[in-house]
Amino acid sequence: MVKGRMLQGARAMAEMCALCRPKVISAYPITPQTLIVEELSQIVADGDLEAEFINVEGEHSAASVVLGAAAVGVRVFTCSSSQGLLLMSEVIFNIAGMRLPVVMICVNRSVSAPLNIWNDQQDSIIMRDSGWIQLYAENNQETCDLLLQAHKIAEDHRVMLPAMVCCDGYVLPHAYEIVDLPSQAEVDAFLPSYDPIYKLDIDNPTTMGAFADPEKYMETRYMIQETMKKSLSVIEEVARDFGSSFGRSSYGLFEKYRVDDASTVVVALGSMAGTIKDVVDELRDQGEKVGILRLICYRPFPKEALYEALSAAENIVIMEKDISLGGSGAVATDMRAVFYGREACPRISGFILGLGGRDITVDDIKTTISKAQHQVADADFVGLKEDLELEGING
Amino acid sequence: MMKEIRVHARAGQGAITTATILANAAFEDGKYALSFPTFGAARMGAPMNAFVRIGDAPIRVRSQIYKPDYVLVQDPSLLRGFDVVAGLKPDGLAVINSTRKPSELGLKTQARVLTTPAARIAKEIMGRADRVNTALIGAFIAATGELTMEAIEKAIYTRFSGKAAESNWKALVAAYDEVKNRENGL
Image 1 (cartoon, rainbow over the protein chains, first blue to last red):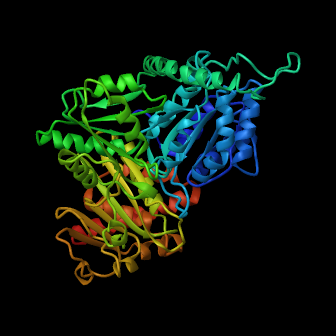
Image 2 (image 1 turned 90 degrees about the vertical axis):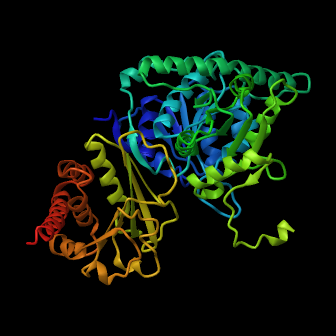
Image 3 (image 1 turned 30 degrees about the vertical axis):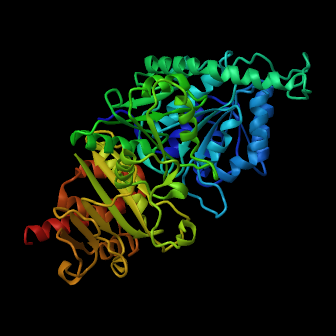
């Protein structure tokens, strides 16, 4: 018997959230995050989790509620997607600036317009500059595992920054697969109750995030930047603890799959890495030296570790579900900066796939890898419909 | 070894339930499984797919299924306008809810085609001709033996409870027996 239960992803995530014992949950439903929030509100209503589930009129309020609750010193959770996350964005930056260890799941979805409810990773990628730690999951098991770790990382006194666990909308929360959730006792042993360094307290009044003039503001940014760099080792440490506590490996900053002797290494985030691994195995059987580095931690961006891991590669092929319009893919941009001016200088190609739910097929991945052998791509779109009238654009 | 199943239905006909039951049964049989629907803003009656992958190792591939081993068609009206057997492997199988003979359906495939009167069975047992999904599963299992009936029974009783579980199981067994009897020339 395979260990675990056959669960819908959203149910597994809601159960994992409850096992982490947040005291306050606030969220506003938005496709494809809705299932998780429905399951959670049921868990709270059934009395299976002692938490306040605060209903609000929109995502800006949901984020504000968890900000306030975290400020008085309790563990909190929220969850959103796409336009909901964008509506939260003002508060998202405030949460990081106030150094509150809020944890959220971003169920990744494209951004309007045109209105599209399907998966890509544009929504969370937009938040990359906010000061939140961002961890991307490949499957439902990992989403749950990272959610547990995210609380521990965020609340670590060396970190005290919010963390966002990103999972591909529909692809993960709407799928049924086997997930092995830990017991409450195991979770409690791994994740002790939140011990805030500072909190809003009427006996010891303080103000958070009030005002910083030009004499002070820059230092607040510097401190977050430095903390982000230092949190890389905390993320790795928590992943190691997780591995020894639960007997299931957690990869920390990234997962290397058949990378060590690879001349071509694909870099990708999230669920498409699973499909890419199958392609890697197939190409390996044909004698091609291909591997995939699945980036889990996108913020902080593990520059040195990536340089070490990829410096022997000849070709780095970045496949991502986002685009900085007018620029390049976000991950490709960051990856080029890692190698610029350094001794190792692999060819780095950037490809944009799967926007707005376009299916990423095995053939798409093979074509992309093959294309990258012959030319350096900046931000080439893969899988465009040839019958659409693009002639005017292509000249 | 991984087997891929593609379910064709209209939204509201229980294709996600079909896929979930198959995935659950695979899990009960000690295998790995992944099931998911074509995602969308579902309109009742709109054509849709659900997908199941079953394997001996964890399932990693997340794309839709383009070269299925098996195709299950819950609504015969989908044969008009949709190539339900597209990409079906030559040694695969299509199971179709239809009272007609496979040769009358005009499907362009080298694979075996099996028809089962799932709507009639559902009407007789549950009083609802549109609840065909469990009968279709019964015919599929009878034709392929891909999953054990013990596992399927557990999956049915996990998904449904009370009378719904009993009648769905009865419909599933009736369709299973109907295929087995035909195979045995009864």
